[in-house]
Image 1 (cartoon, one colour):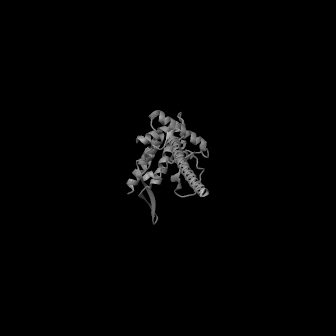
Image 2: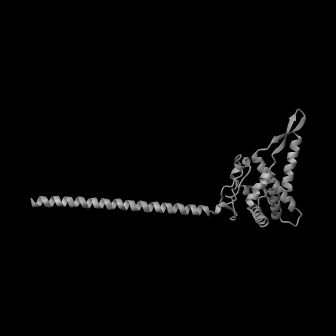
Image 3: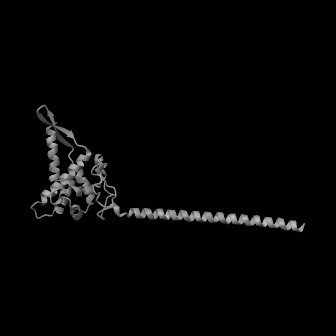
Length: 240
């Protein structure tokens, strides 16, 4: 009889011990889960903070591209302002049609500055020219140079151009609308050509001329890029 009571008490004690252990384990799991959640939230917050300070968001490490606005909705999908680690794609998109729209717009300007015999193949030289030009733009206007570049492209891109149609032995010019991608290409070309013409046999540096060309085109003032756009549109208007 005594042995049976002792056995029952022992079983009850073991059951209680098991229940206590299970409760402790559950509490420990909950604590670990809360700690993991806290670590995850802290990690997410730190990641967001790092993303806000992400250096790739700044062109040349200075100019923030997240605040740049594109007013022309037709050009918006062809002007790339995605964060990049370096303004050098290495021509990986050269053989793919229309993929140049994914190249950063500042790098496309740098590539346009390499068109003459003085800068051909000299990417670093063209890079430094645009970098100095952006510094000059900020000193003279106090505005984001990338925003002024985007405004200059929107103002300098011709909306109408002419093509040559052959009717028998006669060539007739015909006015056509210009696609948004070609407008950007033409605007960048006009800006680069205007800077190169200004700097030729001049005391001004190519960086100063490029800065003046971008500022004038962004303001809609008289400059080489705006005059070329008006010339093309005037010829197209006469060929309608």
